[in-house]
Image 1 (tube, rainbow, N blue to C red):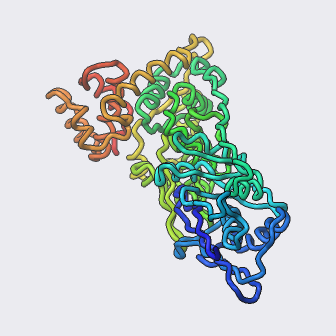
Image 2 (cartoon, one colour):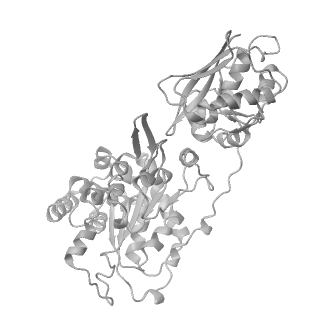
Image 3 (cartoon, rainbow, N blue to C red):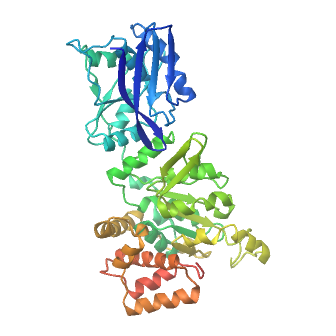
Length: 502
């Protein structure tokens, strides 16, 4: 045959779009053309493919070779198209044939892998994202990847993944000379919760510990404000120790985002915890680049994003958090197209009450002028603050050294897991993700509660969004108490965590 058609995948964000690799070998002066909007690294595959074919013991055709990557309007990047292009050249030139002499049927196969000059298949790039998309959009497909990438992709249930170390092994599989081995997913190293910082290290700060438990139970965003050394960072670092493990589907999504960002998922199932420095740019925080890569909010998908010294972050970067906090994803637009990354994260932030940090401290004097304090607080916009569920003011406690140790994380984690289980059984999502209609249905108030909420909204000028967030927090407090519904006591406690104007 002079024409071969294979299937591969092109990555755009976390979307692995199907790419039809068409290779034609015809008569004419020797030439090798790549068409279909290939990037620079894809155009370089011509030299890799040529050397890999020759060094694998095959003959490189002397005619005119054209490789088309369709659809043409989809940008193609990375070296993962080397393997399907090389295999297409061999098929189109008649060097690969099934045992009966006919051309092998490759319609069920998806190929991805970069070739070295020796013919070894070395890398695929974001294999888990590719595997998840293949499993969702092409049931029954067989994915062929290099060994390291194949073991990662084998974590996706219901997907057949074959591992191939060299181009010769792939040719042997389809010509009957040998069979490719199925990839086996490695057994992940489970994270022992005892290795995480324990909440019992925090002495005193009873209200803050309670707010942290509520935030963990309902996946609520939390802003802590207090003087230096009061325990804001210490509390935030102990949040992962009281969070329940992720279900298998969410754990795979987290691992796919990390692989797209060039990171490894060390402890699958553990919610990620990201704490970028306040000098992080907007692109580092929300994602970006010439080839868009996931930012910190996406790397914290299904986990926690901790922003310490919140007002010190670039204002543009903070304002870019507003939409992802509501939608759970971020879209990055470029001239070549738009990439969408998941960003369903739980925001936890900390800040000082003033530039010097000592405002309200019982034994330290604050010398900040009202104008300086106003400028400092104005770095955080009202729309951003309005999207944060829990606002907590921490005070310096002189008796912390004599206070008894609090509950360990294990006990709090059990209560959080029970409350989260109640929410998932009732509505399928944590309370923080409840839409308005579902919130009205599940957080019905009696006459006393309705009067209390209406009076508080008028007195403190709450927005409709702010009132809904109070209701979500009250529902989480009721779930922690395993109460059948939201009572006025749950609502009153939730109101303590809402600023006077929001």
